Amino acid sequence: MNVPLILTQFLDRAVSLYGSKKAIFADDRAFTYEELNTRVNQLSHGLKELGVQKGDRVAYLAPNSVEMLEGFYGVFQLGAIMVPLNIRLKPEDYLFILNHSESKILFVDQELYHLILPVKDQLKTVDKIIVHYKDEPTQEIDYDSWLNTKSSKVYDRELLDENDVCSLLYTSGTTGNPKGVMLTHRNNYLHALTTMHHLRVQDQDVLLHVLPMFHVNGWGSPFYYTANGASQVCMRKAAPVKIFEALKKHKVSVMHMAPTVLNSLMQYCEQYAPNVDQDVRVVIAGSAPPPAFVTRVEKELGWEFIQVYGMTESSPLSTVSTIRSHLKKLPLDQQYRMKAKAGHQMIGCEVKVINEHGEVVAHNAKEIGEVVVRSNGVMKGYWKNDEATMEAIRDGWLHTGDMANVDEHGNIDIVDRKKDIIISGGENISSIEVEGALYEHPAILEAAVIAVPDEKWGETPHAFVVLRSGKILTEQDVIEFTREKLAHFKAVTGVTFVDELPKTASGKIQKIHLRNNYWEAKGKTGRFVN
Image (tube, rainbow, N blue to C red; front, side):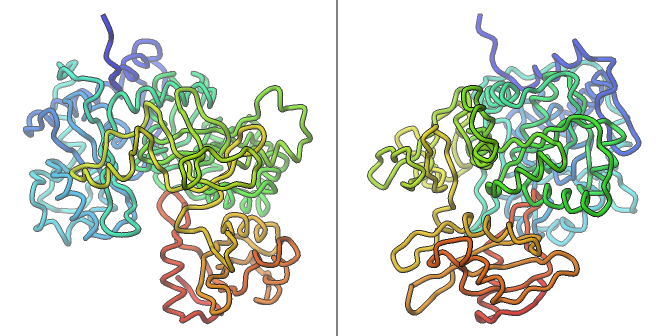
């Protein structure tokens, strides 16, 4: 008889084999897997008493915490669907998502409750709001008090099919309203099996949850680390000083994060030189960094750098940049360049790059096409949006909107989003390539490049630059530097110096805000604060 691929099996395995292991660390608290499972059962009983049934949506607005972690399994036991909310949205965004998803229960952290309060009276389907770490007098339910009154007996789970939806993850919605990505138990289960192999997850691993758990790559990681009985450290705020404290205290061996977060850790190391004596793997998801960035991580920090690529709609990961054994004879500089790419397809994933005619591009690292994916991780579709689903999934392939080329070894290199490709004088310019050149300047801490209108060329690259502390550069300095590093048509034609770049909660730079800032400044260069 076939066993359905249900995510609750992962916690069952951890409890069976690692039940007495202190494995979940949150602030000054520590829990064994047995203790976590007890809390999960209490949560499931409590949700049932509130009338939650199979298929109902349960939303979470919380930082990385044990309350968020136990929500995964406690919600699933009822066959309900978890809706993790981005903690950096505005009240009106939460109003749309909660009403669109028809969420029945909302769990919210006390620190974030003020984001819900302005729209609370407009919520159409939310019956109860339960507050984590409640420390203010409100009419909402206090989570700890509520949970402690619930039975800890093993919950009699709903009968689930592996193709049942387990999560509803709303994309950032940079244009129009966000879309709810429906991922099934099967999607996440098979993705976990694939990813735990490629990331070499073991029971002695200690994962520091740096990426927010509402982010799809943060969302996926509890499954493959729990399944292997690894330890997990929940970090509410991912500041460099806190990360290094956790690295030392818990002997953290693996972290998932965006390139901008890793960059901040390198700056911290330059200034404070913290001592980390254990082996550390950093799994980087987001825009591909320049090879010089990879070199610094591996040589200066001594950490293993692993670039991965994916998107919410594919559960998320589809490729990995690890160096295959027969390519380790290549010179180190070539290996670092390879590690900075999106890499090769993971087991169980079909990934190809196609041109506008649907033909696979030549493996020459030059021809550019769109990345398309076919795998068990591809979403069931967008919630209540058949039109968008049919646009994204065509002939069984998920069209990612990411543009890439492929080298002679079959490694995919993301060059840009479709919308971020700069077309100047008929030539395609990758903003990522220009950003990579900017990062080589010793005075530049962060950089992002967008297209701006130009009467002669149609579009040209414009850079937003954050300087390192105490450093001074002029616009012309930056322009000349890119002309030295790149073909002249790829060089930036203007620079805006900023104190910081706008980012998502996972650390991804939000170029739509940079475009808006550019227009508000009417194209003038100079210093302003976002």
